[in-house]
Length: 273
Ligand code: SF4
Image (cartoon, rainbow, N blue to C red; front, top):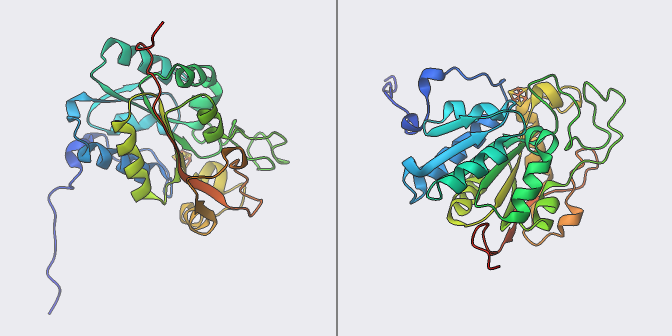
């Protein structure tokens, strides 16, 4: 007997997605889909009403996420997601504001802004999707491109050291700092839920396959191959020395993931003089 055909009229997350905007623009094998799914699922699980959640992005492939999430969404100019979100939060303290953006947007063009938001402990959640390059604009070198990596602007290998994002954010006083990969969906979802609970500046880095911009020139294969790399090379160590957590995909040393920082600190606007 043939198995019964199972047809679903709707997906459980449909009400949180702007399905009228699909199909999305992302390449097959990109990590952005599962990462966005974790964010949406964490919102559904949170006790904060959906009307209070707001998402803000800058430019780039990750910057497109707010366009697909069916809550109040802002797609701002390049590198300006943090100042926009800061104004939004300070003017509307009841909102749960999440900046969901890429490594280039947050740490190159917007680098100045994120440093000061972290040290001031502005009450924002930042999810930084790190795919090690500028995917949307042609796979150029960015501040998180590992040393030695091939990009369209470093055909002989990147001669620069990459930023160690979790170390930097912890040093600036972020009250919550975590790093996962697009493969570690349960951990990522829990981390986002924890960030929603925290008051102050939270930062989650998510390592993501970019098979087109980064995987191909560096012979990492397709998106699934990069996911396999994460399965093989990642270790979870919440107590790791963050100074030693820089990423080098060619060094065959572990990619350290974890929930590194979870502290309390006075939030911007509530300091005593
Ligand atoms: S270029 Fe890279 S980051 Fe952009 S959609 Fe394609 S795979 Fe994803």
